[in-house]
Amino acid sequence: MDFELTASMMCANYGNLEKEVRDLEEGGIDSFHIDIMDGRYVPNFAMSLNDMSFIASAAKKPLDVHLMIEHPNNNIHIFLDRLRKGDTVYIHPEAEYHPSTTLQKIINAGMIPGIAINPGTSIETVMEMLRIVKKVLVMSVNPGNAGQMYLPYVGKKYTKLLSLKEEMNFEIYWDGACNADKILEFAPKGVKGFVIGTTLLFGKKQPYGETLQNIRELIF
Image (cartoon, rainbow, N blue to C red; front, side):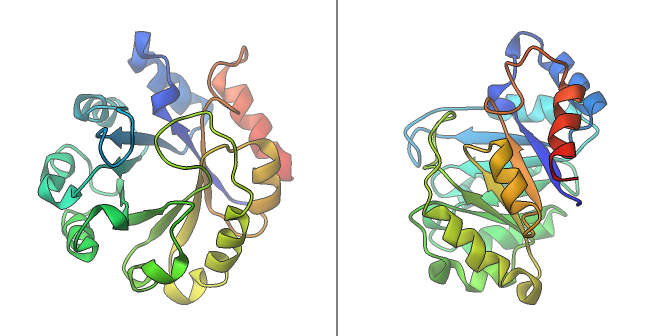
């Protein structure tokens, strides 16, 4: 079963970020998840523009940039100018007056366009955007903080999106409270990738490569 694992870099050790990036890549991580929070759209501040820029310069693997900010269209160029073609940029549709305009700027810059869907966001409200984006990041917790509990009703949202993904040509990614049971259940159903943080990856006593191998062996 082919699925992707992306490291939630807000959970990394910032005492030596370059080593974290290198160790994760050597261990087999597929991409780096960058959470940008502005303290307005979500009640928290997380990674900075400089954090993102450094990881983009140090990493060979792609970045998945998750913009939890108000009106990203106003400053989207600041992020796009510091990323590489083929990186992914997610926006929250509720955070923008005209989200399709912002998504088109992401496409024009050679990036992969994505939307992030909050637990309280219905699929019906983003239906037309599903025809534009290539990735849908489904939040299984309310955005803004790591270490939250999984919201069980979000499972039905994954089921609905899985029924639409072939017709509309997008992939589904899991973000929040991702444990081994969730990968074991949803990867075989067609969820393409999983953002992993403190629950599975960071703060453990074993090397990243060993941890990532153990996760991949779950569903074989």
